[in-house]
Length: 274
Image: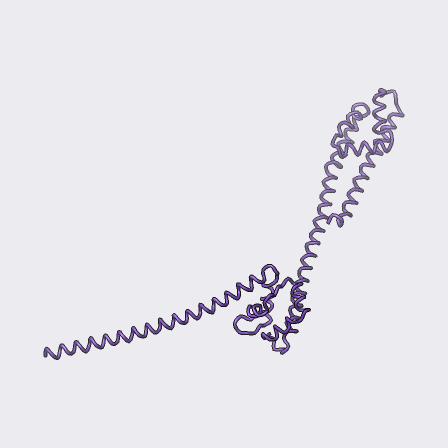
């Protein structure tokens, strides 16, 4: 990002250098003109100070650099304003407002804008790369599935699945995709569920869940145990339901027998009294 923002940094620095160079030339020419026009109006100490700071273009440039970046501009402005001309106060007012305040903030804003724009491009590029990786991954899964589906019916049988896993290139590709397969039978059972065949949707979903060597075996074990627990629970439920149904039938029969017996006994008592 920093390297790609070099253009903004270059033009910002160039603009700042031009501003300082213009100010240095103006100060050098005006101070030298005043010294040559009436040197007696200044004390020897003042003339020495003026020449030391503004006597040549390089000295003036160095002085401008100092009061631009150090913040000590009143030290360099006081003598000019008090000893030479009060109009220098206006010059320093305009320069400090334009360069030290406005220009620095404009340069910072431009640099940050270019940097953020480049960062946004990098983020967009990263998203595009991720999308391409996903598309490539889906394409690889399709190629794997079609290569394994030798019957061409769109379903992988256990035999077809184990056959394709014997190919060294296939196992290498799976390992490169962070898919760890230690037990092919368990892996197939996890993908197939309970019908014994694997569709492309089941294959894709299972591979995506298995992606990542650190968790693939755990996922396989959990899914296998979950499927076994589901089958056992359903079997127990059916057994309990059948037993409850038998108990209900037995209770109904017993209730009918009791009702019939009581009715018969009641009729017998009535006949005997009559």
